[in-house]
Amino acid sequence: MPERLAGKRVLITGTGGGQGAAAQELFVAEGARVVGCDVKPGAAEAVAQAIARGGGDAAGWTVDLADPEAAAGWVRRGAEHLGGIDVLYNNASATAFAPIDEMTVDAWRFVITNELDIAFHVTRAAWPYLKAGGGAILTTCSISGMIGVGRFPQTAHAAAKGALISMTRQLAAEGAPFNIRSVALSPGFVDSPATEERVTSEARDYMLGLQMLQRAGTPRDVAYLALYLASDEAAWVTGANFVIDGGWTAWAG
Image (tube, rainbow, N blue to C red):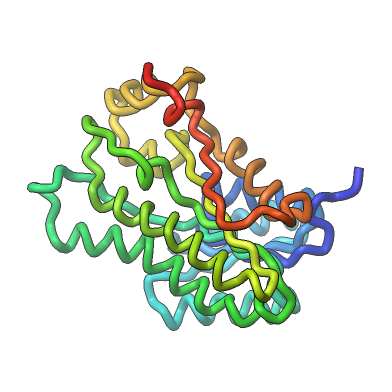
C-alpha cells in the first residue's frame, strides 16, 4: 500500500505527548515530514528524536505559542525546514476547570489564550504558505464546544472549543478559493497526560458512563482520524466537524 501522506509537509502543535505525539508518529510512518512543537521544554525535541532514530523525518522545538511572535517564528522556521506547508494541525492546548462563579478572570483568560488564541496565532502565520499551494488545516476542538456537561464545570473550555469549531467553518469559507481545506476534530474523553493531571477518577467514571463504547479514547484513535483528514483521501472534505467520542453525543443513555 502507498504511504497515505507521502511527501506531505506538516506542522503539528503540542507534540510533546498525547494526541500530538501520536499524530506525529503516525503521520511520519505514512510518509509525511513533520515539524512539531510543545511548550514543555525538551518534550517536542524528545518525541521527534525518538521518531528520527527509527528513520522518520521528524523535528520538534520548544515554543510558547501564546506569544504571537514566537508562534509566527515557529511557523516560519518550520516552513523553511520543510520547504513549505501542506498541512497545519492545531492540536496544542492548555485548560482550567471551575464552576462559573468560582472561575477567576485570570483562569478564564488563561484558557482562552491557550486554547483559542494559540490556534489563531499559528493559523494566521501559516496562511500565506497554504495559500501558495493549497492544503489542509486540522483543528482539535471538543464535544465540549457542542454540548453542556452539568457535572463537569468547564465554561471557559466550552467557550474556547465552540469558538474553534466556528473558526474552522469560517476558515473553510475563506480558504476555498485557494484550495485550503479546514476541518475540526471533536474528541470526547481521551486518556492522555493532560486528562490524567486534571480529571478526577470520579469525573472520568461519570464521563465514560455517558458513552456507548465503555472505554476512554486513546491518542491513537484521534490520530487515525487526523490521518484521514490530512490525506488526499479527504480532498472533498472541508468546513466539517468530525466527532470522535465513543458515541457520547449520539446517545441519550
